[in-house]
Amino acid sequence: MRYFNKTIIAAVLMGVCALASAQKYKGVVDKTIAVVGNEFITISGLEDEVQIQRAQGAMMGQNERCEVLENFMASKLFLMQARVDSLNVNKDVVSAELTQRLDQVRTAMGGDEGVEEYFKKPIYKLRQEWQTQLEENSLTQQEQQEIAKKIPDVTPYDVKKYLDSTDVEDLPVIPIKYKMSQICIYPDREAAAIAVKERLLSIRERIINGEKFATLARLYSEDPGSARKGGELGMASKSIFWPVFSDAAMSLKPGIISQTVETPDGFHLIEVLEKKGDMFNARHILLKPRYTAEDREKAFHKLDSIRTAILDSSITFELAARFYSEDPATRTNGGQMSDPGTGSAYFEIDQLKPEDYQAVRDLKVGEISEPIESLDNEGRNGNLVYKIVRLDKIVPAHPASFENDYTTLQGIVQNKSQMEAIQDFISQKIRETHIVIDPMFKDCEFSRKEWAEKFKEQ
Image 1: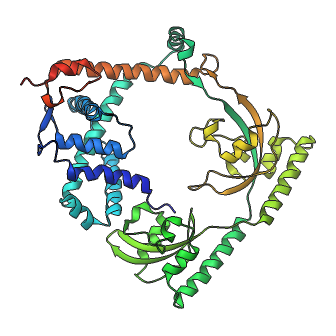
Image 2: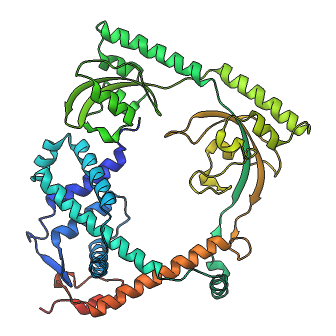
Image 3: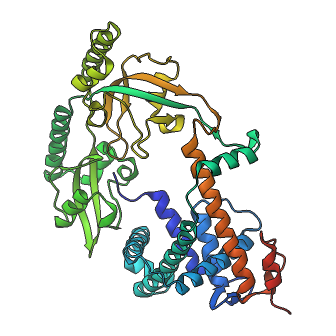
């Protein structure tokens, strides 16, 4: 079920919770700890950022506040330059990010009342504060991009110069990569869907006849997160669910049981418990299509016949893929697989489905696997699919070279040049900008020595 990602909500909640508690810092209520031009950094702002980074899983050491303060001061340099350059906030992006943050926090805290009670601030005030923060982040990122864009495109000469000046042991190592083709057969999804709908219809009738929705959810729902709570999802924004699920839930009156609702996660029965604006609390029972041993045997038999015909040279793999494969993404190009994220025909091990890697790991180039059970790239977790896989090519792990890995090296050199330009910008602005740092941070070991000259005299 694509309701809220609990890890993300926990991270957002932990991060924003700091806003309510960051006022205490070694006995000081709050104060300005750094001035960068006409921008100010406060204790509460620093503590907010520390907690947000922790919540997002950042690895932070004993010097964490010093590191955050240094990054904060550097970001203010970009922010001031962005305003000088008259850069515009991307309002659509900021609006989307703000809505997402609010929805996640409201969901985690059970609605607007819970948020306002926790933060001791009205929603409109939190919205204003977070919008300002997101707008500043947008300008800072845009200024960094403007600096990076001024760097000329890397040429082959630049790449060769990088290779000549870098020891072999310091060159990036290109991991082993596989190029593969596949022929896929899907189980009878229509029959499985009909069977699931019939099961849900039976459960719905039992609820209407007096059995408790919560009890049946505990017994039958295949959503483990909500099943143990009687199918209850908790008060949440409609935006965090699949749209078809939210639409169905919002159309129901409390206590009414929905008809079967299909989402990429499976099939649902829904009972709405409460609605507040664009939020609702509902119970649901999720059932997923089930496939039988007969489905598997039938698909494996067909794939084995296709494999035999290819090995006997009765048909080529490419032609067989065009005729028999049921995967539209690879069928038209002779079965050749490509990464849906990058479009590359080469896969690193961690980019492969575990089942696919197990199928090809012991193959030699040109060999075809036995039929296997795997998952496609559709939906959240993928749909069941049966396939045979041909190993087309292996590129062994190796130090990056000009001949084989020019594109990778070009990106590395380009990124290196852009980062150097950004670092030079920071150094220049530190020298030119009026900056004052509170002496309470005098023991910080900043990565840039220039900051040490900016402490306020006591």
